[in-house]
Length: 545
Image 1 (tube, rainbow, N blue to C red):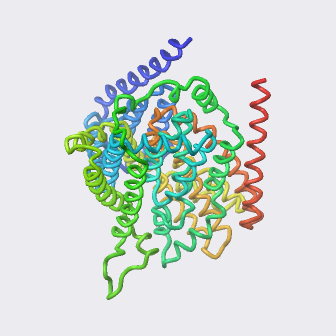
Image 2 (image 1 turned 45 degrees about the vertical axis):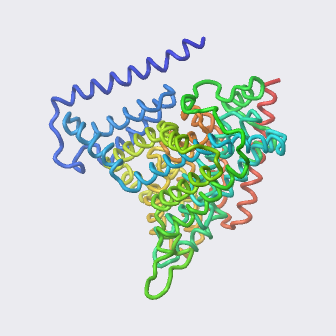
Image 3 (image 1 turned 60 degrees about the vertical axis):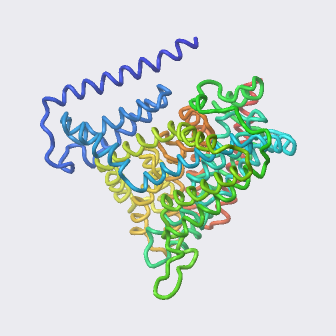
């Protein structure tokens, strides 16, 4: 049965590639459109076709690179009205080349590479192995290992990119010792990335949301919306409950059982197998892992403050801490902070004589090689987003929101949540979803209206939910990289958990639309989440019996 299972996705993939080839051949006889906005596909439901194709192929074929590329080509075909020349130009010049020319994206890629190098250095110096030995002696259970992972993820609330890779590199030795599957580790990383950042007032996400509100009231609105951010809060509740109750279900249960019973952490493909290196210095200590990570956190925080103008004198005074964070550029801050941390780590390991200079330099290409899968997927995901933007997908969804805002007033938070989920899932971006939905919501409701605060929170929750579920989300991609898990495996095992939380959040937003009391509604939402998990656990146990 296994060869057949593997063969079917390949057939589907070949058919999809042939379909795209036929579209390209047909395009040779079609005249190009003079203007993108005059294309018959602009601002229509067809603008959502490229991400739908990419996501469907990725889930069916278990192969993400070609799936994303087919989605990019499909978007370029629609944008150019099936012009062969226009398709090539748009896919590469306006897609791949454009996103790799964007300074923000390049900064994120540099940050990824530097973190990959730091992880390689920490492994080679023996810091990771020493931490694994310490953790094995002090954290005795799988539950403890997973709770420690959650605690570190909550502690690193500054930025989701930083969270994903740092938590993964630090906690992998510990979770591996206790046979926690890489799929479960990636879920824990992903669930403590965006969901934690979106409820942390001092984070790059808070800064992004606050920037859409004028007159300096953005941070106040963000804080008021936190109790209504059901998806983020319930994700944390669900994650802890899953670990404590041992209530894994769906595909994740199979991966966890295989890890526990057979010691197989991957249950299949390990895309990072060739990047792993078992050589390490036996003289490494826990401080050789902890000190570089702490310095990395401090440097990244300082870097984000610097990018926000915290150290710049304006009108005779320095900018305050909160304002600097609200104006920070996460890409610049993380890039500069990680660069300083890398220099510190190099000097520290050389002074400790844990590695020679040649060994230190050898970790540079090794770290880059470890990040190649994440870099490739990120590049294709950004290019796919460029295709959907050029087709007016955001304008199409925005028009749907505006047309439905007049009626169903009490149901509007739940409706906004669903639209946010769909838009973020299709485009793979939370911040882009914020930019579309929050201004529309604030145009419908004034800041003084409690329902407006609930709807803004629903925008944020829906964006995080869709981002959490989407295979083309950069945060999801980096959670896979942080846990060194096959990307499609991470998405397929996480999806049932995310959808369960989304369903409870949807019901909670319906209740909030009528009750409009933050703490009463939050208490009801938490009870619903725990009750749902209890029912799922009992149902799964009955099926197993």
